[in-house]
Amino acid sequence: MLPSVNAKQILKMANERGFTLVELLIVIMIIAAIAGGVVLSLDDTEDEAGLQISRSEIVKVKEAILKFKLDTGYLPGQGPFRLCNDGGAIPDGSVVNPSDPCNKDNLPSYVPNFPAVAQKKWFDSPANFWLLFGRDDPCPDTVPSTPVLDEKSPLCRTGHPLEAWNPNTRRGWRGPYLSRIGEGLVDVGDNLTQAGCGSPEAGTVLSQVRGVADPFDARPVNANTYFVWRTLPDDTDATTHADDPHTKWGRPYLMFDLANNKARIVGLGKNRRFDIGVEVGGICPPDGDDIVLDILK
Image 1 (cartoon, helix red, strand yellow):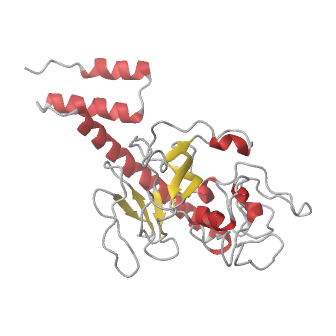
Image 2 (cartoon, helix red, strand yellow; image 1 turned 135 degrees about the vertical axis):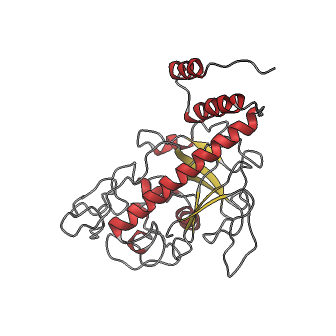
């Protein structure tokens, strides 16, 4: 016989203890299941709560991306925000060097320490949400005569019209567009392409990618090689970025095809794996239990 449960007592305990959102959803779902005479496993209940939170978080990420586009006229990483390829905003107006294509001055302070190829792959990683957060370290002073219009802007000191919000033109970067909840620095594989082909669990490790974690806690994979998360420090000492990896953390959300009308956000779902579908026209749509949300629809 199922025991009697006082819902008010359980919710009172939750409030006193300070449960997380996942735990509160689990409590509510257990109460509903008991009231209906249904027996659920804790794992199933936790996964269902995680799915609800993940769907809600993906919608918020989409809203942040669309706000970025409304303010700047571009999706993240496009136009002048493509700081690691032709067309990116370069402070001195110089032409991009194909063998060293990144505007190092405007990337986070620890990225220029990477090899040139790794810098571009870091910037292009589908797990990288850095442009939506903005800078955490001081704006570069390579051109001291150029004023700083927005210290957090990825375009700070470039002199570009979109460097900061202009109330007259109603254009410009005015982030951060995402809060710091659930974010951090994650190690992912460079095998995953911007079209969604490949795997984030393969290839050379791209370290310290500015990611956003879903609610499905899990351990890193492949002998602690991929999906290793670290908390972003509150200071600007780049040496602290590699400290204290989390034992367990969520999987990173991913952004694909921001350069075309197939732009989408993907969550890895409760199986915590990126499930690749059949490639069609150079695009690899997610499969399995991945959570997908089109950005422009």
